[in-house]
Every structure is written in C-alpha cells, then in structure tokens.
Image (tube, rainbow, N blue to C red; front, side, top):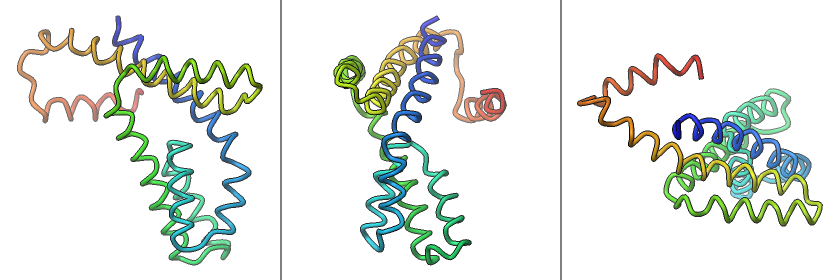
Amino acid sequence: MELVAGVVLCFLGASLLAEGASAVAFRPGRRLVLQAHGFRLAAVSSALGALTGSGTSLTLLGQTLYRLKALTFKEAALLALGGTFGATALVVFAGLTRAELGPVLLALGLLLDLSRKRAWAQAAYGLGLIFLALRFTGSGASALLPLLGRVGPLEVFMAGLVLTPWV
C-alpha cells in the first residue's frame, strides 16, 4: 500500500511543482531566453529546465524559435541542451538527497503560502511531496522484493516497457 501512496504523491507533487514553477518562470524566463546569448543562454535554459523539470519543452521552444528565425541554430541547440541538463540535474538531486528534505520543503511551502507567494508555495509543496513519495515508494518496493524472487535487469526493463503506456 505504501508503494501506491508513493506513486500518487509523486504524481500530485509533480503536478504542483510543474504548475508552480511554470508560473514563477514563465514571464521572466521568456524575457531572459529572448535576450540571452552564448553561455548566458545555456545558464538560463539550465535554470529553467531545473525549475520546470522539463527539458523537452525547452527543446520544442528552441526548435520553434529557430524556425521563426528568432534564434540561430547554435542558440536553439544551447536552449535545448541547457534545458535537458537542468531537468536532469533536478532528477539527480532528487535521487541523491535524503527523504528528510520533504517535510522541510512542505514547511517552506506553508511559509511561502502564508506570505502570499502562491506560485513559489506550489513549487515547494510539489517538491516536498516528491521527496515524501521517494520515501514511500522505497519502503513499499522493498516489501515487494521477496515476492519477485530473482528478477534480472532485462525483466525489469521489459516490465517498464510494457507498463509505460498506461502510466
């Protein structure tokens, strides 16, 4: 049951994080992307990728701006690669940090919510719920390990491949 609770918390947290971070990053991010060049563009797109958790959206944005001739090919590539790098850094950070960070982020979200910074609060709530989800899914999955017996990496990969369209 902990595994199911962890998956639900993860989806809810990702939704809140995406909604809050996109509200925080949209207007300033759009302005920065259109005014930045070179290394500054890569840094801005990395930060936006980490805030939104989506490198794909920045790749599509770079492709669109390139087709509209608003960016050169090099700048569109920097936007795409920077966004992917930022989103990957967020995932690595989430995987390596301890689950105790979840309640701290939820408390930070409450403080931000009380100070009327709604978008920042949503992002903090979402990230806090994702860290709590990591705790629940870890303990729930460890309870399932004896039921699986000896399952190799190929079987796990195939199960993920089959289950992905339904998630």
